[in-house]
Image 1 (cartoon, rainbow, N blue to C red):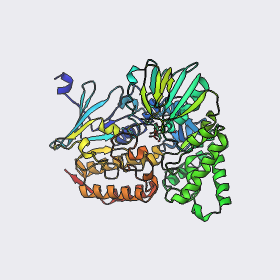
Image 2: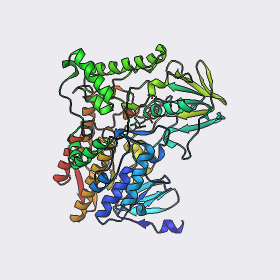
Image 3: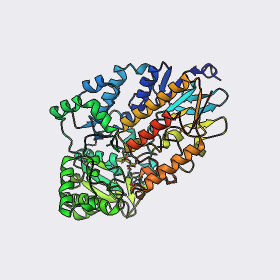
Image 4: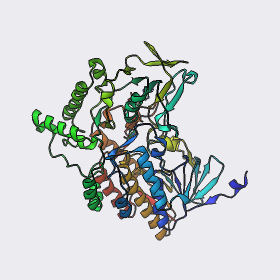
Length: 539
Ligand code: N01
């Protein structure tokens, strides 16, 4: 045993991850006077915005909303140049927050947590890092992110490819120049759709290997209108409060008032056309009350987008392949793009349908489908993440009572409120499965969870308590409620990462809570107000 291991670092709270959630956790827990430290695998802070540096990476929620609300000075001072933040801009913002609030001194970079063990005699978590450090604290907070475990499918022959291979979620810091190269992109989710127009402008030839077509809407990105910014800033505190009263935690879109089938065909077309011109995914889904619960209604919104695709893409066969037919619009993350469909009108871009002729192998020279071998210099995997559960399952997370995360989540995640799990005392998750996280404005949800956790830790301290754990019955009821809410919507119809469909062998369970931010926060607040109802608290 090294000296380091015999003398563990002692903290009041361990935070795993220094993205948006982890940084705010440091800020908030420090205010309680706790000794806290975040351990971060990356060489910088920023989480998802640190890793996802592919060309075209940009947020799909407007900048004025997608930002921290905890400091009015911060939200007044910071200037977003565009309607939607680019990855470099958002990363610059997160770094600014880390500096402005002096958070870096409690962040340890280049450090991956490999294991976490709870000792029920001391009520403490002990974590080990990949550089051999041992750290112990009564509380451990997983700020590990929902889309932080990139996955490359195991295609036969991948190792034999003599060109370069990239994943959008692990993009090289120095960037990549595609000039003169033959590039293949596998995957057409949000990452692929954002990346493809940029690569197309540089590459000699681009092949897009599409298994499933996705719906995408024009982002209509533009420089931020100074008058809009001024008005938004004047109303910021009210707008932040209003956001909590909306299903997705985003204020500013007028809530829908009627069903799509109550509207005439002409009225619907006018409505969808106006939303299409305005840009914004929530905006589009807000056209009518029932787009995410009624298939007939949804089909009107889906077909409108398909018509736009057919009108944009000149080659009718390509256009038809790009029209999604296997899921209702909005049941997968609705993508925002800039010139995605237009890109297929370029002479140097070809769409390859790998649904009808799958990729059989990767060869020395490129990708071989059932029909053709495509010669390539570069392959980019835009194939997504082991979402929502992947990051925590990568850690050897267990208790001295023999509970492991592997077993706990063997048939899909089980949590109480997406914040804690029965059998894992004193372990908190920020935007864990069965919370609205990924179905909301993420920063708002991170702040809500961190605030709830901080209030909980304060309550424990004030009450002389040292241990908190959900009751199994409360967890079971929450899991059941989450499933029932999802089953009342169209979401489970899609083969999305929300149900783990992108990971071979992952149990098909709908993971986010889709009852809306308003109902969810009310529930969390009620639970706390009733003395942490559904939790067992102990000395
Ligand atoms: O990943 P995805 P992503 N062979 O899982 C395909 C957020 N995000 O990185 O649908 C061939 O959505 C797969 O095909 P299929 C956002 O929440 C936000 O794009 O499984 N293809 C699909 O086309 C988003 O939803 C922004 O048939 C394979 C693609 O790869 C989430 O991150 C930007 C395959 C994966 O799509 C994930 O997005 C970027 C295989 N073996 C990301 N395996 C913003 O705008 C997978 N695919 C904020």
